[in-house]
Length: 100
Image (tube, rainbow, N blue to C red; front, top):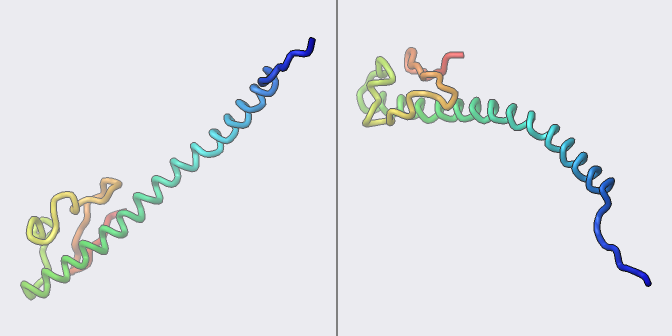
């Protein structure tokens, strides 16, 4: 009698697991590098937003703020004082920057 034997052999399963393992090994390190890029771009975007609020402060008060704390809470909130990477924003002569 003929039996229908559907299914995978042990060798086929090991090959599939090996391919999945190789893909995971290649993908995981790239994700770590991408988070650094996201934090840098997020910080650049935050600097742009806070710079526009500094300019708005200048239009209202006719002088630049002495520090970033002067802008809270009317122009920015407390979360906008630091970048996603933890660096605090600084205002120097009306220009916002994040120390390297």
